[in-house]
Image (cartoon, rainbow, N blue to C red; front, side, top):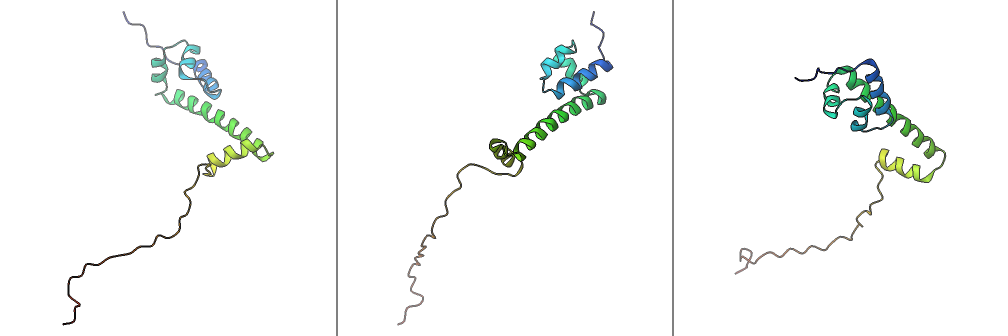
Length: 117
């Protein structure tokens, strides 16, 4: 006989939001909610769980971005470089050097059309 389908409780939803906000993997969140990863994946298809998961992830990203921004503003060189690469499109890849104009010579075959007789 199959087990009854488990639905997320308010406690589960709060746990999902909190752990997602701390950067935990789905496998870890599933363990904390006492469900399988596949069950958690199915839960994420419901609006309440999907929103809690996204809200947690957004909060985590926001916290880290704010910290990085504050470090960059305070003069942390590594933070400045990372911010500029991630947000301003800067790159430390070497750019191709500009080369001098190449001389182009075009040879036209002599077809005899301009010959003076």
